[in-house]
Length: 258
Image (tube, rainbow, N blue to C red; front, side, top):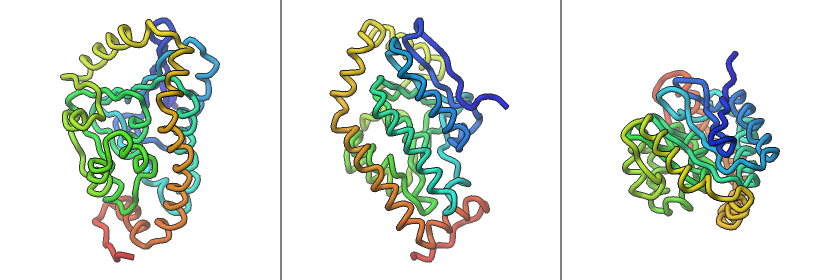
């Protein structure tokens, strides 16, 4: 079986690109998250790395985490594994960038939101559709208010709407929008050569720690609370379980409002 995370070394080892490799959806299931965790755990051994990029194989960045792993009996292990990625990224303190084409939804958008920089091409569609399944997005509930402001975060988290790359740029989530994937890869490569490669790797890591001190404190202190709310309260409701099951059954949910 092919590796679910492809690892590339760019700019003479100064940039590492991690590609979610399970097209077309690039779903963040347990296997992919384990491979991604291993790749992140290896980065402290590489002191010359100045930037970590995340992208998706094929036409899409990521449809999100595996819905099948959201069912009540699997949710605790899934969230623990998923949230460990965010704690690792917070502690890693290496600059990060998401390069987004196509669908970037749910857990895929949460991974992108954790990055210092988000780039997209015009095919990109970004959203947190969890509420449509009767659940919520724990990391995004923390990250979106800090990155886009509370009003826009509420709009995305409570409606589940999906927005274009241009709309994401307008609210400050996406740094630059390119015409297509090829233009994005070339444009980001030029941006990296200009803005990242000339810098000191060790200085960049200290700068990330400084710039993200409050941001990471929120993630590390509040994500466990979000996880507890999700597991202990939300998953005790009938509608959360109905929402997940109806998606798996490919039918419309029947809400009972309890």
